[in-house]
Length: 337
Image (cartoon, rainbow, N blue to C red; front, side):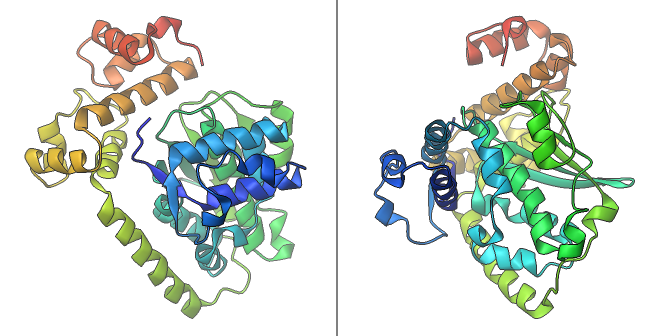
């Protein structure tokens, strides 16, 4: 996992508060913080994502809650998100709020890739965590559950009951019974898919919010946008490369450094230098991206090794097999989540 990714200190606050609701002593939980609790001051602060994921694992363990993330998300209130919460509350409708969640998700977690697309009568919100960790499913479940909860909270009370997705899809296996997911998320939930997705009816997402203030919305959005731009200016090349490699669902031939640099409108030498400054390299990003995508495709049990090899731009199945064994220590045929 790349140690360059960071995430908001809000994750620590949210996990700590929810664990306390489950009778976990804060003093016991905070023993596992990589810093004194008194250092958590400003909501805009960021920490290494590895530390946050380790903390969520410990919070889940101490709470004896295998679906800690999903339960924390259902119980999450907008006020946990600081200034961005007020932006969401003043959006015109749920679709607008979901669009902004995609655009500004980087502020909460640098390793989350979000996308919102529309197909006929439905909208599809896709989210992916670009790291490997035992707590990764917890974070994705928290993210999805809190988004669904957000939709209910920003609409009028008379409309909140109809704010529910058509279906939720997860890449991972269920952490608790499938029935519990269906009850909490109030929709069909399926697992071991190639993508994490929330599928909703367009009519549902066009539900208006409760008394939005356009002037306040524009004012706060400027502040959030300025914060995002400052973050991106500090560390953006690794993010851009990862986004580019994820953008195409099938590569006939995996992009070279030169091709990627050209697509990002820079030179290969400049891109290589900037990635090094960010503690990364083009080859590391390529390996990490291909390995993550390969595991998702294998886990879905839809594609053969030969088909996965083609989709990820390998020259042949044998080349894919050698690379996968180097990454995981296993052959693709022996891979199990």
